[in-house]
Image (cartoon, rainbow, N blue to C red):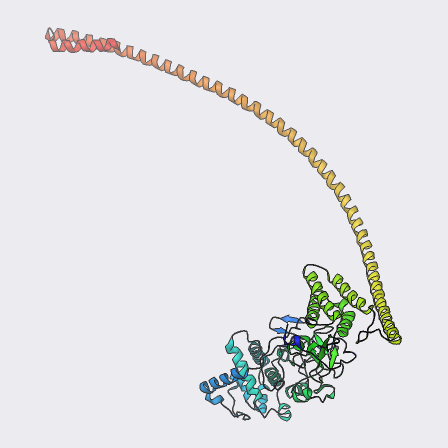
Length: 559
């Protein structure tokens, strides 16, 4: 538990607290902002963490509805200024001095706008194209976001310090400023990117008042400061503080409404983040006899009882919360009553812890909402006791009972209205279902008709398929017969070819044999004639010639 867990408030609590925090204004722009506290909120600027109440509006990771400080740390600023003095001696100016010269028009930078005279910059900016001004705004957005590194953050801190140190930025001087120049100066001083957004259009007078801490820097509020002409110490000493939308402790603002995370003081109408109150000891245990949890307003130092306030907030707002919001609210109440010594406060703490676990394990928000409302209703029906532990006077008891009955009747009326709304919604849903059913029946009839057509087409296709199958079988049979006939003809042709080859070979051999016989006869005749002619001319033949003739005759005989 935080440091406030052991705090004891002995002041007598006020009879009631303010209702849940409502919307500051209706019909105004709810844009996501990056915000800073006023420079003199705590004597010296300091860097703070983001507030926890930033889930109402989300537009981008770098911009949220939660107040996010971009105010420079004094140590960082001093180091940055020392580095700047060493690197750029020409930028070393006195506390309220203003540089009298400006760079060329096409080289105008954010440093020029933050350091040069208002009238000179205004005259130059009248001749600048809109694209150049948009480029300057985009550069400043990147510096405010500071997502590119420490160097970018230090550059923005240096620009902010430069603007804060100027003494010539009076209302008279700012009336001569160009609108774009004024938007850049306000964005640098407050650290709010929304002033650079093209859809946010504030009058020049409003921008001047915001710059001079005469109007709330929360665009959704826009109240004159001090709001409601409050003369308390906080509103009179904190520059730019608005008691209608800012936390008394951290001076941040957000767009949370209908929640337990903002506590309002019924006496002075100042608001405080519940987390800030717990962290700074503004919520603690009451007197020993009661032991209940009390809230002490830092603005007026009056105390208020918290159990009845939490009960009123849940009775009015719990049906409107979604699952995530309900978990956050229950966790907030659990942290408020963590160290309560009172029975009902302790029971509320245990109940919230139980419901948070059930919601995280899958239970519906409707069941949890009904359970916490039943818990408060059961607490009302208990026997009323005085602070000394005795029974109340009959008249006071009757008044308490009448209040309980009246509140029960109001709850029943709310439930009745809710049920009537649900019945109406259910009736409309039923009528819509009937219409849908008729449409579905018509579609079903059309589908059945289409199904019959498709079935007929399928039957026709099946008959065609069977016919084609029969034709395929017939063609397959004919192909088999043709194949067998081709095989038979092939065998016949092979046999005929073999027979033709055999006949041809036989005739050829016979022909060759007749030719050889004729040749043989011819040679015999020729040899015989040679023998006869040689025998008549030369007488007996020589032995060698006779031998050769004999060999020739033998060969001819073999042939």
